[in-house]
Structure formats: C-alpha cells, structure tokens
Length: 354
Image (cartoon, helix red, strand yellow):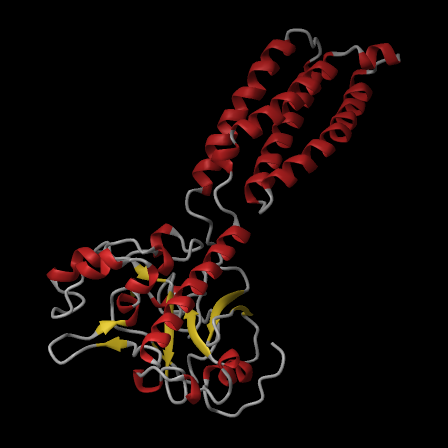
C-alpha cells in the first residue's frame, strides 16, 4: 500500500491545540456578556440569536486568522466585516422581535453587545498575537530557502578550498564514511559540532550517537511536522540530500569540479528537499536517482514517507539548490523531462523555462 505525500490530512502540529484553547477562551468572552446582557434582553429569541451568531462569528474568525499566512491582514479584514455582519444580525433580530421604531432598534442591547464584542475581539487578538503567530507557510518556505542558500554557500566555500565539491561520503584511510552534511559543519559555523564527531567510528555508533541528536538548524525545514523530524532514537532527520546517479553533480558519489558542469551550474541540481526520505543528518546516505523515483512528492511505503527524489512538506512543490548557489522552488507538476535535464551536469539537454 502506498501513502500520499505529504499526507492530505496533515495539519501543522500544535495548531489544533492552540485553536481549541483560543476558542475556549472566546467562549468565556462570549459567555460573560451573554449572561449579563441576557438579563436585559427579555425575549428568549434575542438571546438565542445573539449567542449563536456571536459564537459562529468568533469561531470562524479564529479559524481564518489562525490558518492565514497574514494574521494581521486577516484580523483587519474580519474587523471590517464585523460591522455589516452585526447589522445583518440586528435586522434579523428586529424582524423576529417586531421592533416598531428606530429607537427600539438602536436603543436595544444588541448595539452595546456588538460594540463590546468588537472591542474585545480586537484587544484579545492582539494580546494573543505572539501565541497565534507561529511562523506561517510563507515564513517557513522563506526559512527553508535560506537554509539551502547557507548550504550552497558552504559547498562553494569548500569548492574554493579544494577546487571541487565534496564527495557525498568523506573519508580518509583510517576513517569510516562520513556524510557530506557532517563535513560541511565547519563551513556552517558549527565547528564545535564537527569536533564532537568521531570520524574513526561509524555514524550510528555509540561514539556518534549524541552528535546525531544535535539540532543543526540549516538541515531542518520548519514545515516538517514534529512527528516527522526525528527517528525513534531521537536522531534528527535531514530535510536535504543530494542526488546520486550517472551524470549528476555527485556521480558515483564524487563531487565535481566546475569545468565538469558543461550544462552550466545554473542548470544543475546540487541539493534537493528530501523530507520524505527520513535520512538521519549524520547518515552517509543520499538519494540514488532512478527513472522510477524521478519526481516530486511521490507516494511512500509508510505515512509521512516519500519514494520520490524530491519530497517536501511545502504545498505544491519543493526547493532545489542549483550549482550556482541559487535556490528554486519546483512545482510538484514539473515535467519529468525537465527534472531529468536539471539533474545532469553534462547531459547536454535543453532545459528551457521551468
């Protein structure tokens, strides 16, 4: 059985609990004035209309604001819509209760209630702004893109020092295979972490267990749900990996020098998002590129996994680091022929626009 990636039911971890807490808070905000003003509203119909209307309005507002990438913009829009919404409810209330004059209409407690709720809505939303505003998708995508830019800079600094990109498994005569992600730590200002890695021991040995549990922000995509960030042993997965295969930038696992990129570095992939591969960041493993797994966000054998060469928890696509250091966002519907063309360093294909 194959599972869609990312899971269609995926909901940002923690959002549900925040939503329940905020709605519960608003229930109190609604309930208190409802109880107090209910003493002044004689007819039961009025109380029912207002309690139901206010409750639906607040719940809908919270959901829209929490799920919006632009929290402040959505709150402002909801405030603008607040007045016509309450006027409409007031008209319904007037029809139901048979208000006979404008004085009955405008002098009714609905006006006090509406104004009080509007002030409370604005005040509470801004008071809870730090709680609401965890990074939204646009912010997460920006952070992910910046991570790849930092990785690209590290790879190019390595290139300047050694005249070629690193092998995906860095090793010497007396060391075990070490992932390029570990080797790039000094170039990512993580020299202390690099010093804690024992190259003469395997990546999954006890000697290197603690370092695998170190959180290296440059290898983490903030869109990945908490449950998909670590393995059962608590070791962090890397959100990024290289592609290995004939004519790739890391053919046979070896990094190329710039003259070998005859297709141009701007047309050749260096690193891709690989959140669905669940590769521990210290693990000397990357993605063997085949015709079968060439694609973005292909389904996987388990929930939260993907068999594709690109896999991302961003909506509709994945980021890609090109050989010149640029980061591009590729749509999940990108033509496989284009994907094939940009994975080769010297394939001679016509890439075109993508």
